[in-house]
Length: 272
Ligand SMILES: Nc1nc2c(ncn2[C@@H]2O[C@H](COP(=O)(O)OP(=O)(O)OP(=O)(O)O)[C@@H](O)[C@H]2O)c(=O)[nH]1
Ligand SMILES: *[C@@H]1O[C@H](CO)[C@@H](O)[C@H](O)[C@H]1NC(C)=O
Ligand SMILES: *[C@@H]1O[C@H](CO)[C@@H](O)[C@H](O)[C@H]1NC(C)=O
Ligand SMILES: *[C@@H]1O[C@H](CO)[C@@H](O)[C@H](O)[C@H]1NC(C)=O
Ligand SMILES: [Mg+2]
Image (cartoon, rainbow, N blue to C red):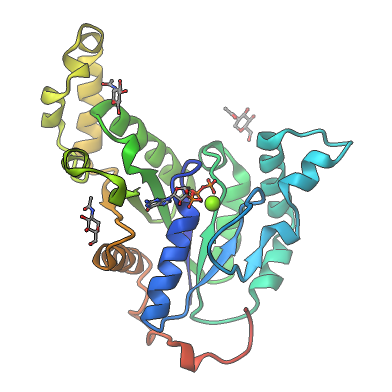
């Protein structure tokens, strides 16, 4: 069995930072984790990718192509579709290994996840390669400062989850940037309860009242069926990083049917 995390979420939510944080954390545990950069628009990141989509295709190449004439957004979709047509390239790059653990650092364009067959094809291909995959959906904590914002975040997460058909761990990132007041607010959304709607200023305003019933009904669904649940990530807190990693490991049953691989055991077959 091989293991993978599919790190997704809106632009700038901290995907690349999450990947480098996990890598550093695992280094300290002497546990081997690799990162694959699948963001064809990436410029800088703080880790050494073992596979980089930009060696296959980059948004820059696509935009400079006189025949294609794409802008940055269309260019990115084009790149991901190109990847989906060249999955053998990815297989070759990943090599044949067993028990490897790979983080896929994905692009930040949300329609890629909610409405694209390219991503689904990628997931299926990795599953055929024997990867057990967990999605990690990151949302910037600063974007969930009130109920309305939380609801929109929850629904983007949900739209992504249903599209992928893999287990998902949803995360409020950048928790370290919050002050005490904001922290309390975000913690309320970790286990959503529809009661909290009563306290929300917006829903009790003139405009909000109009939609209160609808909002309550939607919140009721999110709440009762526990469709979306969030974990928090404070990258400056080792315990927070470790808890999140454990949650994801459990979702893909990592470490249950194999001994945890440590750096010393690695042969020189396969990747990196
Ligand atoms: N303080 C703090 N800053 C963060 C955290 N995560 C990301 N950042 C900052 O937020 C910015 C964006 O982070 P990235 O990790 O590049 O985000 P991304 O989701 O990979 O962005 P795209 O690939 O462009 O979609 C950078 O300036 C990071 O330093 C975090 O947990 N805490
Ligand atoms: C979703 O994808 C389909 C085909 O894959 C496309 O026809 C449609 O325009 C897309 N919708 C949006 C909102 O991008
Ligand atoms: C939610 O909070 C933001 C501030 O973070 C504010 O600008 C926005 O108006 C609020 N929205 C509602 C609906 O209260
Ligand atoms: C994040 O972690 C650091 C280090 O443990 C801690 O000092 C800080 O208070 C935490 N921030 C929040 C918002 O919990
Ligand atoms: Mg990134």
